[in-house]
Length: 81
Image (cartoon, rainbow, N blue to C red):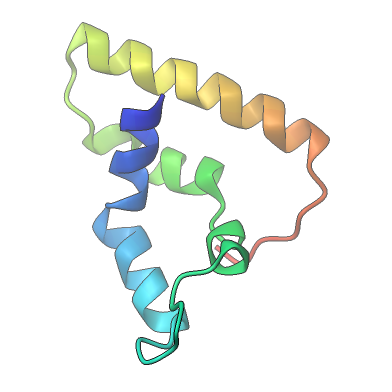
């Protein structure tokens, strides 16, 4: 699950989003609040088709999707992305 989260956070989509909202000259440019603005479920859905079709990779994506869906049912956090 951590590998899938890493792929999502390192994707060009998320990196572009982060570059557009962070202040690189700040003491801590990437904060918890900034990371909380990323809707992992939406990014997952965008990137799902780009993932290789390997069986293990597909299992990791499906497991991660399950965790995201479970968390989204209990979260009331507003997201921009």
